[in-house]
Amino acid sequence: MTHPIRIAVQIHPQHAEYRDIRNAAVAAEEAGVDIVYNWDHFYPLYGGSPDPNVGKHFECYTMLASFAEVTERVEIGALVTCNSYRNPELLADMARTIDHISEGRFILGIGSGWFEKDYDEYGYEFGDAVGRLKDLRDSLPRIESRFAKLDPAPTRDIPILIGGGGETMTLRYTARHADIWHGFGKPEVIAHKNKVLDDWCEKEGTDASKIERSVGIDPKHFDQADAFLDAGSTQFTVGLNGPDYDMGPVRELLAWRASK
Image (tube, rainbow, N blue to C red; front, side):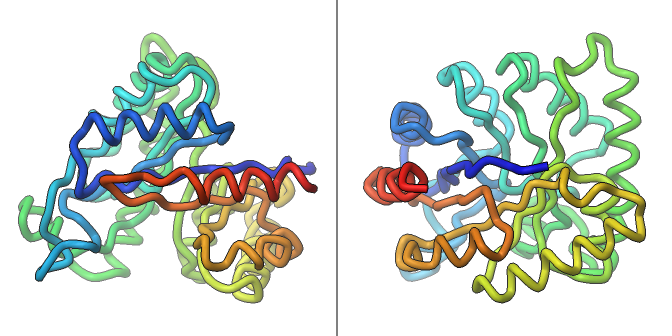
């Protein structure tokens, strides 16, 4: 299967009023992107002063329901949902509901979680990385099972995106459950991870060509876009920070796609 080049925006839901975030989602769609993501955290990840994790911030899934109403064409989702924050059955129901609100445009992006401040401040057990990955392993089949039980059912097979580059666990779960893999790093790192994912697909009996390969790309590295494409990535995500949400880099990446 050959995947088309798709352009995505991750709107960082921090340091901005909600109207600015909502307007950015609409502006990204109008610019021509294919997907609008946010992220699943409770505090800023950077940019606060003097503490980088202090500042305005909004919750992920209530925001995605809003994105579903104010957009018409783009797919929407979290890059990525933290598996620890919601019961898997509840998460499946939330995903199904946004799938219906958006009329079939929701992507369930998910990962094992990593931002310790979120856990500490909201009362979740942080544990260790292996434990959180095992929880993700156990949650994914529960989510899929709940999708099959919900009434009404999802409007489509909701695509599952798994984010992370762990070669022993994360990429194996990706081969087993995901439609999209999202990674980060230099092109040579992405090429290596894609090979590892292909190997896991062979072991899991999955058609590796069906898994779309996504990569985060910084505007400073747009000159490497062709190298990422050669490494196997076909979905390119650029992050935008509040409060301004400058669409200039988005238009630049769209122009690159148009030149292919």
